[in-house]
Every structure is written in structure tokens, then in C-alpha cells.
Image 1 (tube, one colour):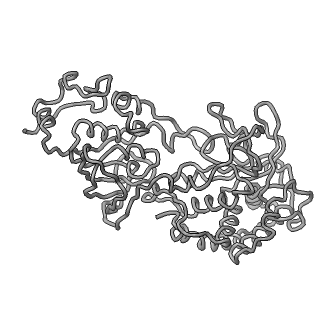
Image 2 (cartoon, helix red, strand yellow; image 1 turned 60 degrees about the vertical axis):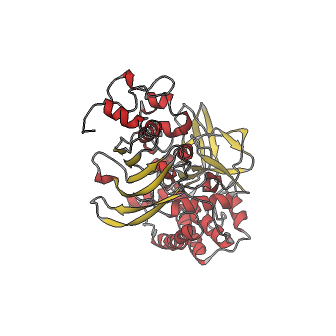
Image 3 (spheres, rainbow, N blue to C red; image 1 turned 90 degrees about the horizontal axis):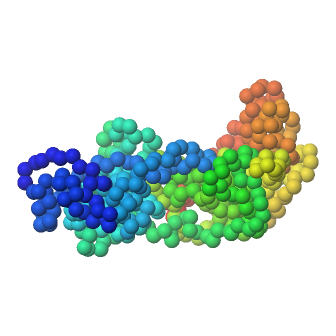
Length: 460
């Protein structure tokens, strides 16, 4: 047939209420194309779809993250009537396009620009289980090669031979990698692995009990959200709560945080004396490798080799002194018409070690570490941290700083100490505190842990 252009709403036109395709509803599809589809002729479908989705990292609107939901994405006729078998793929416009092609032209060759979510995102596992295609080749390029796309992530141009009558499973694909100027810079393999291998499924998460707690949105800031608010209940034996949203590098940077009370959103677990070593490993492995535009969708996996005690305690010390350890103590936090207190169970020192003016309410971490032998790198971090803790107790902060960081108890946390010391350095009212020895020790521990993310199988 000769070339012919026509305007067509592929996600809404000719979709019946029961999810079938009826060209007579719009009469927009040229007869010759209808005939080619009906006769099963070879058809190449090229797609450069929009990238909107109903929910993504930028539009989760609670806690540490903020944004707007993108309305209308899952309200197309195709999503409403023809995607029951594809699970959450109805939330993605580009997978809606793919789903219609699969129904309408089941043996098409598909060449598509899109994100790589349909290859390895956990939310699209149902889509992958029901979409059958053989990978023929392709490349990924930095999203900044396209106008109007924010963030940093790969856009793939992948070619597939689809056959919806022949079951096939995507296990892994290898692509060429281009930078934003379309220069070839290497290759990368993306894996589709079963969810029972994900790090997020590594251990059983403690269940909530009936004890009321104050839900937080930051270290010492109560939640302000009212819709679908979580984190108002505690768990038996809990000493903290870890936000652990998503299972990929994209989410890990902002959604790996430890708190001393509940967090006002889902996507986390309670830390107890039984699982703290696993919590520390999860925390360290999620944060030790920085997300880039190329690895942002890589999934964290359960370890493939035995974990040594040294590795576990290295992870614990790394967590205790990470900037996303937001465990803290505070009195008189106001939420839901009441005043609340939170207790810090994550102080690795006794009161005498750091010249504290009064007793700490909890000595959990000191007792936990009492019989543990630390590596040289972990010991160096602990020693450097002790100096900063002592520097904090050497002076009393001004009222504005005390109020901002809720410095009204002796058992303050690392979040409160490092920020209070930074405020003192900024004001110049006291002798400057030197963070360099701590930062050097912490970087040495980071350098030790980072290669183990890969050697122990947490990332491929």
C-alpha cells in the first residue's frame, strides 16, 4: 500500500466497552491498512510515545517527596477496557500503546523509544508475564538527548519481534550505550529477575501493634499529611523505622532513611534487635552506590554469597553515621492535638565517653556493640564520631538552633549533632569544629563497602 497519513487517537479510538477493536466506530483507519492487519502481513510499528505515568517518583506527595499526580493517564479507553491482563501497566502511556499493538497486530515487529521500566521494574512484572516478544537489538541514550525531559534516566530504542501466540520470557537484554550527544560509550545489560530474588523480599517485616506513636516526615518533624497517613502505630520490640521505598537505585537515594518513630508513608519496615543487622545491610547496600542516568532502574538483589560478621558490622557503622540516619530524640513534638516524645536507640557511646550532661534513655546500641569486634575502618569512624559528639556537648546552642533541631534532651542523634555543629561553624560564635578527620574515615569505610555491593551480588 502507498504511504498515507491520518490522525488517530490510538488509546481511545475504536475501543469498545468490552475492550475489543472496532474500526467502524471512527472509520479513521485506511481500508488498505485494515486489510494488511487482517491478513497478518509483516508490519513494522515505530513508536515514540509520551512518558507520562499516573504515579512516579516525582509525584509521590507525602513525606520527604512532593509533586503532582498526573491525571488522565490511566483513564484512556484502552486502559479502562482492555488492559486487565497487564496489571499496573495501565498506569503507563507507553505500555498502553504496546498493549494495543499486541492485541491488534500480534505478530508485529515493534521498534520503540521508551524508558526501560517494562524490562525490569517490579510494578510491570505482570505486563512482562503476558507480553510475548523476542529482543532483536537496540541502544539506550541519556534522556537529555530529548527536549523537555527532566531528571536523569535512560531512554531505550529497542526492537522486538512480537508473537502473542508464542510464549517467550524476557530474562536479560544487552544494549549499546550512547551519551546525550549520541556518542557510543559502552554497553549495558538489563536483567528481568523474579521478585523473590529482590532485596526488598529478603526478610519478614515485623507487624504493627496497637501502640500509638507520632508519625514523622523528617527527623524531628511530625507529619502534616492527613490523607492515607501511615506510621501512627509501632511494633513489638521496635527501636526504629526504616523508609525503604522501591527496590531500585532511582528510589534508594531519597527513600532510604532511618527514623526514631513511624514515618508518615508506607514503603518501609520496623527495625528491631533481631533484624538490625539486616536493616544495616539493606541501608548500606542501597546507599553505597550512587544512582546515575544509566543505572537508575537497576534492581537490588539478595546476596549471593555468605555475609561475614565484619561486613555486617561495617554496614551498621556506615548506617549510624550516614546523613540519612535521622534517628533522634525530642520532647514536646506536637501532632494530632497532643505532645509526643521520641527516644534515640542508635547512640553508639556511653554518656561518659562523650561528656554528656545527663543520662541517655536508651543504651541499646552500646549494649549491641559490646561483644562485637569492629574492623579498622569501622573503628576509625567510631573514634572520629566520638570527637564530634564530645564537641557537641562542649557548648550549648543558641535558642533558634535548639528549637529548629529539638535539642531538648541529652540523647540527641547524629542528625541533630552534625547539623548543630554545622550551625556553630556557620555562626563563628565558637571555635570551628573540624569534620575532616571524620569525613576521611567515613570515606575509607565507604570505599571498602562499595565494591562489595557487586561482589556479594546486591547489584549486577
